[in-house]
Length: 447
Image (cartoon, rainbow, N blue to C red; front, side):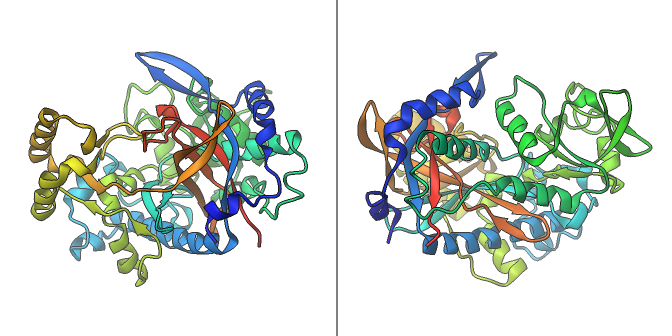
């Protein structure tokens, strides 16, 4: 049975309490921030009360495929920063590694605890109208969004207490335990801490919420220092506590001004030396961007076969690399019906639908692709499922994706929940919060 067939059979949903839940989200400060024209602006991430429903059987297949994919990506990252066998064997061209903005030569030869690079992976999927699930994107740097379905589910319990007693839904409150277990597993001795750039970061709510749930200390850079290659937290009493695992929520280039951008005001001097010495686990590790580069995405099915000797369980969207002459020819001839993505962009930016461009713009875009073929990938437009949302009291259909969260520690585990994002624009396939989308809860059925 598909999720579309199931949604109308749910015994009860929190539809009638949507306003109350959004009011509670506002009261609890569940917002995201964006910078527009140099100005920071906070806004509510609109919650839709009609849940996405995934059957227990469907989730088993998704879970198996996600574990397979993330395990292969972690193996790829270790290989790239060590022996580079996948390049030597001609599976991935070196151009797609060393030219990637996500590749950091400063991370060469570093082995993180447990050889785990992506401790928290956010994998974006869509379900096609053929009921197949397709991977759209891998997010292995600092994927955000787990806090939204967590708190939405919690507030729904307050607003509609009968919902979860009348539906067989997997409890999603174990995310905090999964995250804490992951941090504890790689901890090098000391406390767990979550590093935030501060109040004006777009995901500050999530940083503080996850710190509270996991019992980690929420810190900013001026509360941390490195001494004798150990990372310490300055306590309020003037003492110091060693930090054994640092879940950083700032980008690689700002982490350590002595290793990366010297002008960074939110980094920790000598953090990379402490990390390189094996005295602190950095979650997720610096340098992961080389594996979630949109150009590398094309090669993940090949990685799965190369490292695991298995056929991929979950499919990529049909993808073309203009880097290859044959693919470039196809892209240039069919650009009017493809979606083109700039590999360096994120958050829904740099995504262009050929069908929306004028003839003149198409020609301009073709010239850019010919000039910079490594910069883009092209994909067939997947006609993915529309899901029902409430819009001004009426049920309408909108495009939606799913960000699944996979945590890698002693084992690789998939959280039986996830962030379902939807477009509020009836003509748009772009669902990102930064592009005006909303979110809904994801119910994984227990039977």
